Length: 454
Image 1 (tube, rainbow, N blue to C red):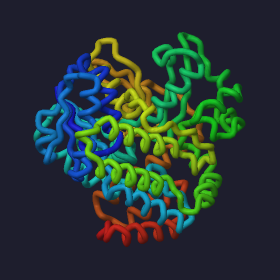
Image 2: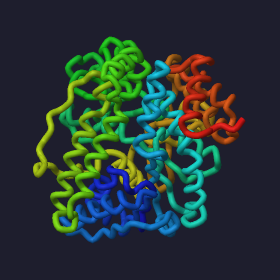
Image 3: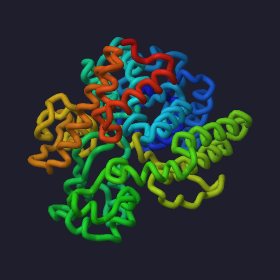
Image 4: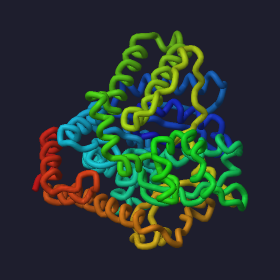
């Protein structure tokens, strides 16, 4: 079986390949084909991926493709992980937002809006290629903003697409480690939208742990995702939050921390880290010293991950290890979610995973074809979202508002309508202003050369 990665020059591809090495034989995967429009970067990342395979003496075939048709033809699974406009587009998105006094994070609010506007038309073209050259392939979308993008593609009729995100699985991993149990022993149930979800149940066996965990200040402070929230807030909500809810529940703190950093936004940090890494890698002879190249890659990946939400939340960064001492992560992140999903699809018993899929009645009050992020049982019979019998009004209202914003954004992209784009942003609670939405649409339209035509 074949996996195609569209956006294969992304830095996480190396970690994806390493995670796959433990499971490719069990999952009947024998080939991974990488494609990216940045051929020079793809050559570097492809060589690092090959070294990861060679150093473990595995038989997985990894190759790079010169064009998208070659990459997807005959694929059983396709991963889409794009950054349309490159790393600098994220810097532009954040800078415009901050000049207008709002948060420009790439998945939440106007940053996500801008990225979606650039990305969705491109992904539509790739989906058409996949439909033509690999019609039975499952598409795993990791391209941000994952939920909104997946909604757009589903609404356009691409029904073999699943949105994946590594935030829920990473949270569960840290919770299990803190509680001294394996991930298999811990059931953690999420519901909501991508980057707007809550944990409503935590079970070890039949024992419900959530009330005890919410009351435990030590637990809340020791889990990275929860430590940025006030414990009293979490107890008043009654759920454990996805970390991206920080932008809603502590909006002014996040904005203040970003402004204090004087332009050192997450996007600028990522751009600088990636530039330095690629400069070092391109300057060396990777064929002569592939392990040295891998250590350079891992060092900069460590810096990248260490900066995650540190500016917005004000949390301290972790100490760094030196080059030569670093191991390749074992496939946590989006790679782990995708591989878990493939394993579930191939098994009778299946497994529980958090995915972005169509609602189909799982969350009351949302439309059947609304894409939601929810715990699902994945097995040979399909993907089965867990039913949420009832939910607090404050969660429902926030989900409905963001889903309306997503639907309007998709419509604005489809029609090229500036007016609809303004309506979409006005709905978003991090904007919540007609005049501000107009200003933001004009600024992004100017920056990207005329996005909206009417």
